[in-house]
Image (cartoon, rainbow, N blue to C red; front, side, top):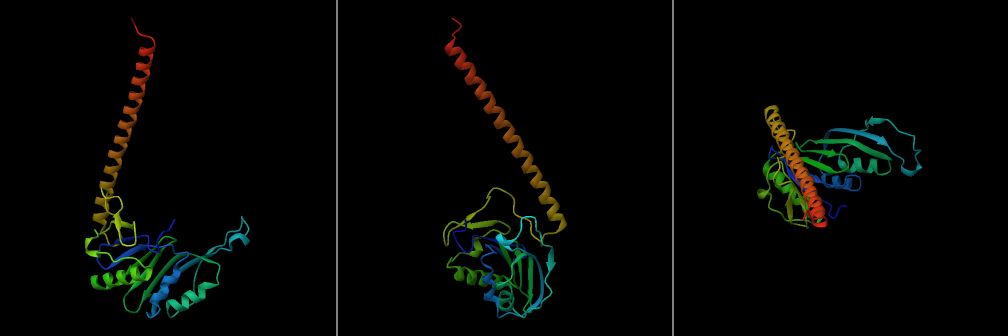
Length: 216
């Protein structure tokens, strides 16, 4: 359940981009706040979804949108009455910014500088009625969820950071090795815990038998 318009935030390693957890099915209107920017390029893949009026066995093909739009206002107006489920949405603007949708759950924003990134975060949080937050205190590549309008909680604080598209192959490979190592450690801990619990149950069963049928 989404308690806030913006559910979470994560800063990416290029220091100029970030992701916001947003229900993009209901809240794609947020793109209207970028209507002053001219769209340079776009990549949109969609699938027709007629909801309850669509037969269960009907599955429409995924298509690429060919129609051009000058800005996000034109795009939202076009999508408003269309029974489209967006599979992929990427917008590049003439000012160097970009927006990408992670289907249904996230919007990713790309700016030209740390200053632009921070100003855009502040602006979007104001739109959502959330914040303010201290962006400088957020660790790169870690997700934070909004426990309240301006109280952030780090997700998986003892785990590894999340890889992003700006990581090198070497960094990704090192991350994969660390991830596998943590998974093995967790399996061992789970196994030892399960083994301990089984032994504990066996000891209790033995104690019950001894108490009920004492040897002397």
